[in-house]
View 1 (cartoon, rainbow, N blue to C red):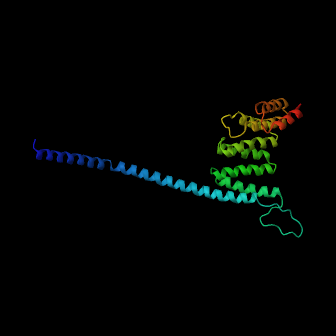
View 2: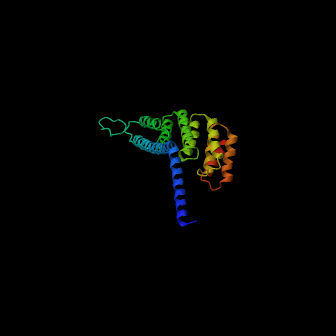
View 3: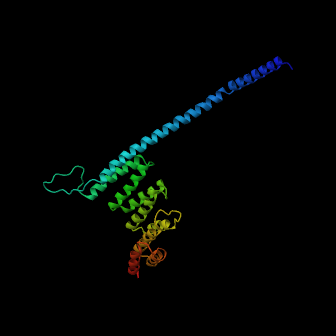
Length: 240
């Protein structure tokens, strides 16, 4: 075959391929436009969501900061002739009430943000300070549910659940929560001897002397170097 004929055949083949590609693009133009539109929509929505979550977290952090200012405000009892200090509160209870209101505002408005979770935890602490232990236990449990049991606030929330239920004399709930912490061997961030001591204290408060003694004996046997040894021995002596 002559070179000129081969060249002409290649040109015809190229023309055919290009024509076929053009036809396919024309046929699929609406599909391509739809896909392109969807990709653009995903980018816009994703960018908008990121901006919204960033704004929400920033706003939540600002409100949380305002609440922490209240927590750190001075206590100044009213005295005749004394000039009240700016931002002060007459009693610890008054300061706790003000802080509780502010923390509640934060976690109600921004419940899923980091600041919202922290605010819920501190609100539980304020409730406990005000003697509202059953409510405090509920707030602490909400912290665990939202933050996750193995997160920092989740762990602190679980300890809060134990303490608040103990103070509310809901001993069965407190023991269940404390036992769950002891049984969570996958989490080694909290000292096991400390968790056993907490369980022993709750069992003792509930009047479960045999169970408490067994738990405290475990502290002594399994953790001979524990800083809780003396306390455990003292509690055992009191229980017998």
